[in-house]
Image 1 (tube, rainbow, N blue to C red):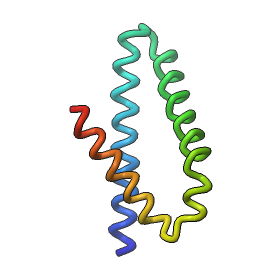
Image 2 (image 1 turned 135 degrees about the vertical axis):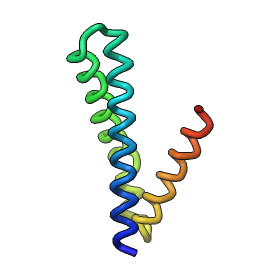
Image 3 (image 1 turned 30 degrees about the vertical axis):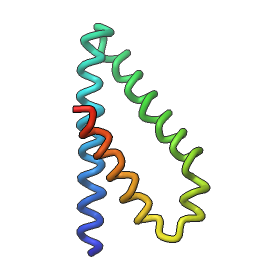
Length: 85
């Protein structure tokens, strides 16, 4: 079971990295410079981490099973992405 959880964490990280690379390449076409695109993507990523920590930090501390909450959030993200395509 632990190996499956590690594999899912790895897959989640890889998919996030792929999305970052895609956004960086698209923004490089718009900005005309990869430095600006990279800084925009990193700013959005770090801002998202900070905002998520601020909004969900207390909820995770009170949640009985944090791994279950993480799974629910990942499922919500996957469903949301499916509707966008």
